[in-house]
Each structure stands twice: as structure tokens, then as C-alpha cells.
Amino acid sequence: MIGDKKVILSGIQPSGDSITLGNYLGALNNWVKLQSEYRCLYMLADMHTLTVRQEPSQLRARTLSLLAQYIAAGLNPQENILFIQSHVPAHAELTWILNCYTQMGELGRMTQFKDKSKRHADNINAGLYDYPVLMAADILLYQADMVPVGTDQKQHVELARDIAQRFNGVHGDVFTIPEPYIAPPSAGSKIKSLQDPTAKMSKSDPNPNGCIFMLDPPEVVIKKIKRAVTDSEAEVAYREGKDGVNNLLTIYAAVTGKSVEDAVSEFAGKGYGDFKAAVGEAVAECLRPFQLNYRTLMNSKDYLESVYKDGAEQAGRIAERTLNKVKKKVGFVPR
Image 1 (cartoon, rainbow, N blue to C red):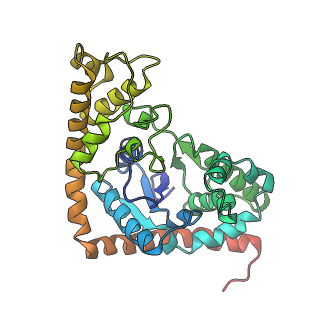
Image 2: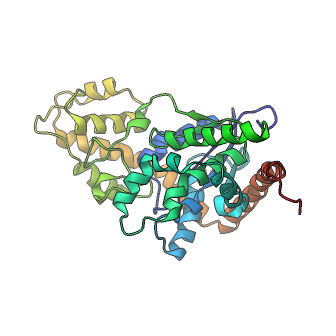
Image 3: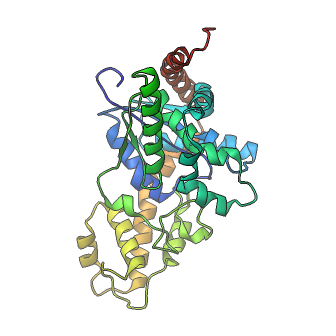
């Protein structure tokens, strides 16, 4: 807890050119709602990206782009600490110490390691295996009470809890035991791939038509929606077995603020062509103010620099307090 507010920490990897519509509706929208009630730290998780080979100039550009997208989505730098992970050396230092309190068997059970090893069979590196310990350090450095995560990351928060409890059991109450924060179910948290509506919308989707990016031009958005998988029934209805149509209805409801039931009524008796056209236009309209804000921010590099420098200073102060306490507990000689 910082002051009288509980602490929330989360972050996104700058591993793509843009966040997805799913990221925006399912994560960032919720972050914006949390910023007045909690003390929030949102990092740009550039260290995590290195588990997969990155082009250095691209990584730098994408990191600044993601910062602009955070702010364009509504995260106020005056109310949140927005920082670049690699700007706070304590993340790497604490990771090494926590490695010595983490069991090999625990890391071997991480499902994301197994999944990513299959996707990147030519680069199964130690960082990919150790990723959850870096994530634990991210969380524990800031004494986070809660960590907003999707179900795919919940296992990593549980490991962070186990590591914290193990360390505390040896050295006393050093770390806050974090809780995963699962946002209340909403239309935005259930966005699926346009080409495989049984899988979540992801920037790593091998089919470029499966994912809508927040920086996609309107004509690209409309084209992707037009190509979205539906079915042969030609009926706009929300029910089991109509995954593609259900997904488009969910997207339409999320970007317009309508209920799925109202959306179904709106398109009663209409064909998929009219339905997809309306969904495409609604999504493009939703992205318009975000893209306008983003372009303004990207033309203000000095402002972005001031935000990440201030964020690093604030995050660094908090992280150093925790790290110094940890170093003392494990027996390091003070510098």
C-alpha cells in the first residue's frame, strides 16, 4: 500500500506495432477505471520481450509507441506511474535473488513456457524459462496488492505469491502477498480472433485478418470485419455454436455500449453483409479518437520523454526501498 491506497501493477510487452482491440477493451479500459481508486503502476515490459528475438530499433520505437498508446487510451501520467521496465535496474537485481527462492519444478509447470517453447522451438532460452521469476520481481518490488491479469497469466501471479510467502517465511514480512485482479466479466473481456473465434484475439495470431489493432486505418478495420468468420445460417443471433457471430456481436456491444441483446434486436432480419458493415463502421468510429490522441502524442516526443523519465524516477524510488530491504535480509554488505 502506498499512502492510503492499495497498489496495482500491470504491464504490456511492446512486442507489436500496436495494442489490439482486445487489449484495449479487455485490459486498458479497466486500467483507466482503476486509476482514481488505486495507486497504479503500469510498465512497458521491454525486458520480457527479449525472450523472443527483437530488432533493436523496432523495440525502441515500439516502446515509445506503446507509451503513447497508454496515454491515448486514457491513462493519466499525473494519476499513474507509467514507466519503462528496463529503466529500473532493481527488476533484474531482484530477479536473481528470487531465482534462489524458486524451485525448478515450479518453473517447469508453467503452461506459458510449454506453449511458447512449441511456437519458438529454435530459441528455447533460459529467459523464456525464467520469465515468471522476472514477473514475480516486477510485482513484489512495488508491494503490489493486486495484479490485473487475464486467465493466461494467473498462474504466474500464483507463483509470485508462492515465492513471496517462501521468502517471508525465512526472512519475515518483507513482501506484500499479491492477489490476481480479475476484472468483472464484460463484453470487452471476451474478444476473440476474427478468424478463429474459439481463441482470444492476439497480436501473435498467424493470420493478420484475425486481429484488429488500435492503429489500423478505418478501411483496414472494415475489411477485416468483412472477412470475419461467421457460419452458413445467415441469422444474427447469439447462441451456442455460432462462435463467429457471437464474437462480432460482443465486439459491437463493447464499442457501442449497447447490450448484446439490443444488438441482436437491431440486426433482426438483416443479413451478414449489413451486420458486418455496421460492426466495421462502429469499430472504426471507436478507434478514431484514440488514433487522433495517439498521433498528437507521437508528435510530442519531448512530452513522452518527460513522462517516462518521471515514471522511472518514481518507480525507482519505490523499487529501491524494497530491494534494499531484501538485500539486508539476505545478508549483503551495504554499499
